[in-house]
Image (cartoon, protein in one colour):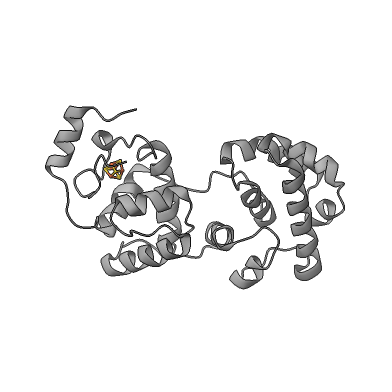
Length: 232
Ligand code: SF4
């Protein structure tokens, strides 16, 4: 949806010149996106880890369509580690790159068994050493399951962070550094999981309001403090 010209003019009339205050953003998004949580369906840490690995280059909705069968047929790392690659690939095929995804999660299950007794370690370096697991995936799991305050930078978090003036950079690690600095400077007043929940709310806001191509500034609760109103 394009922003109506009249709305755009109204919005930009009060356009902020400085980065949006992180405390204000956090509190407004908290009121708007109540109970934000990862949208990947899971019952335990292993399922969350596998689902997050599968979510690369696809959507959470699509992942949620294949994981019920995946987790039913191979309900734990031991079962998945012994699975036939072709059978797993067939189940995850709707996500695209079925054989690659199957190889990745079978290797992940084998490493979990070999090095962690089939459990998900609550350790950043240990997680990043697992096949298919990078910094973002490790932050998703440690934040959502283990309760740490960690920003998981995906495309939505990156885009909103730039539009809100918190960073001008694009590399996820640099975006994370800049957002953490902004939050530390402004203080969000949130709980111990502030970066985790802020990240989840930025993702929801990016999906529902501040979309990549047509941000709905006229309907956005951040319109008066956002320095990038209407800029795509
Ligand atoms: S929708 Fe518009 S006002 Fe809201 S955060 Fe995005 S660019 Fe800023």
